[in-house]
Image (tube, rainbow, N blue to C red):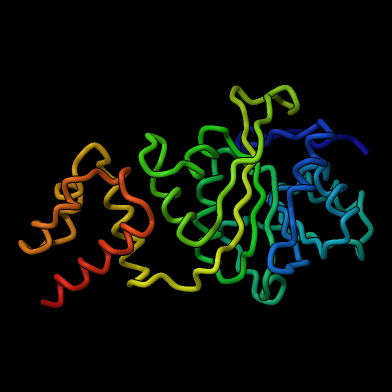
Length: 260
């Protein structure tokens, strides 16, 4: 079979180092007993080959028609399911209606959006192992007080245990990207629901980091703060100084101030 041509507009960089592919596939643990795995953007199936060895119930989602044609020739129909579509806009319904894990060499241009979609499906997605731009991977796994700590750091860490696993150099890809990649694993924690209005929590975190150099008192102004709320000492801090628990507390206090 002729190789699939990497397409720049899809952000494709095909992994060619088998040892790296094996290491990524091996990072999937089956957290919470999930045996169903969705691979995003399998390309030519380098990672897929190692996933098949693990006997997962494997589903692939691919937007590139050339890749789909290649994969349909490469694999027996009963060994896995191939879904043609865009993960960000796909409605899975029956195919992935139960607990499942997600894995992939994620396109750089949509990696953050993939994790926001995961957060929407957090009741079903037990684990994610993803390779993405190193800078973005470090941002997601950063702790409070770190300059790279941001919106996704807080939101992911509210519902998942987040780990930076290892760095991958450009030369293991075809074509090689201009930057290093990082592999992370997120595993669903025991928080079924935050102890606050979760929609307001998401909104508050996003607003807090919208002007991250400002104090929270100034950054949160567009949310309509009462004088009582504005007097809270915690608002002298900047967003990067607060952990998940502190953002939950702040959300509770904002709720209370609106009711009074």
